[in-house]
Length: 509
Image (cartoon, rainbow, N blue to C red; front, side, top):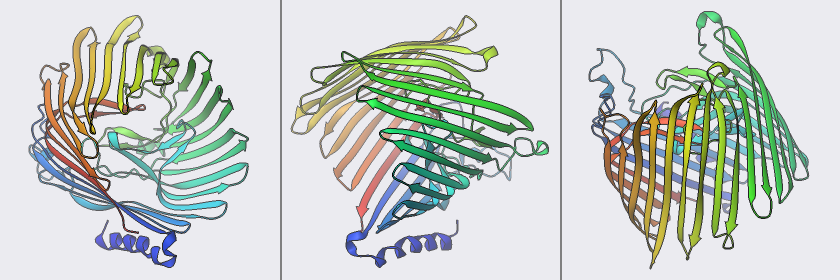
C-alpha cells in the first residue's frame, strides 16, 4: 500500500467530521505498539531466533451523525531475517518490514437500512456456515472486503454481502507475512423475529482464488443453512441450526452436512445445558496458505469442547455434551460438572474422545474470587488408547486491602501420548494494585520433547495507572505449544527474550 493511498484514506476519514454539529462528532484514536526481541527459544528450529521487531497498529474510529468510519494502519519493522541465515541466495524472507493500510470501513445508517463498504467481520448463526472474526489471543483476523447491506424491519431482518476475503497480513503467532487469500465470497440471510424467537435462513457462495489443482478447474463452495433461536421462558431456551453444502475440490464434488442443537434449562435445583453436534465432511475453506500450510477456513462450528481444548478435527464430528450447575450462597458459589462424548474423524478411522470435569466458582469479599476445576480426558481408536490427560486449574485472587491483592494462577496437565507420559503447565504468582498495575512471576514446564527446552521462567510487569494507557512488559522465557480458544488452535513457538506492549486510547473529539 503506497503512502499516497494511505494519506488519501486518512483524509477521507477525517473529512467526514467537520460537516456536522460538535455534539454529533467523535474521533477516537487507539494505538498499539509492540517492541520485542526474540533470542534462542531452544525449540530445535533455528529460523525463528535472534531478531527484533517493532510493530505499531493505529486505529481511527470516527462518527458524524449516522455515518461512521474505521481505519487500521499497520507498520512493522524487523531487525533481521532469521529464515535467510541458511537459505539459498535469492530467497525472499517471510519476515517483511512494511507499512500497510490493513482495514478500512465506511458505514451509514438510514432509518431502516445500513450500508457498509470496506472491511467487516461477519458471522451467520453460531458460525457453522460463516465466521470471519478477530481473535487477538491467536493472532487471527479475517474480514470480508466489499459491500454489506442490512434492512431492519419490525419483524424481518434482511442482509446481503459480497466481496473478497482479507486477513491480517502479519501472522500474530509466527510473525511471518501472509498473503491475502482474496477468495470471492457472497451471501445473504433473512431473519424473522416472532416475538422473542428468531427464525433465519441463509445462503453462501465461495470461489477460491487459487485452485488446489490448476488442471482440474476452479474450487468452489455452495451452502444453504437455517437456525431457530427459541427462548420459551426464563427457564427454557432452545437453539437449533443446520446446513448443507456442496463443494468442489481438485475436480471432485463433495457433499457436507451439519447440525447443532442446544437446550438451556433451569430445573429449579440445578441448571442443565445440553448440546449435540453432527458434522459430516463439512468445511468452508478457501485458498491454501503456503506459510501456515493449511487452507484459509472461513467457518467455525461449535465444538462441544472446553474453550481451551485441542480440536484436531472439526469437519467430521458426532457427539454430545451436558453440563449441570448449581448456585449456592445467593449465587456467590457455583458448582458444576461437565461430561462430553465426541467422535471425530472419518468413520473408518474415527477417534472417540471422553472428557469429564467439574469445578467451582466462588466470589467473596469485595473483590476476592477463586475458580478451580479438574478432570480426565481419554481418546481411543478401535480400542487402543491414543491419548490421556489429567488436568487441574485454579485462579485465585485474594484482596489485601488498600487496593492490593494477591493473584495465583495454576494450570497443570499430566498426559500420555501413545503410552508415553509427560507433563506440562504454567504457574503465575504476583501482586496487583488497583489503578496501578501488577508484578507477576511465571513458571512453565513441558517435558513432551526431551530435545527441547523444558523449563521456563519469566517476569511480567503490567501498568495501567491511566485510563488512556496500559502497558505490559515480559522478560525471560515462556512455554509455547498448542493454544486453543473456542475451537481455533494455533501452535505457538516458545518465547525467550523481552517484550514491551503499550495500548493508548484517546478521544480527539
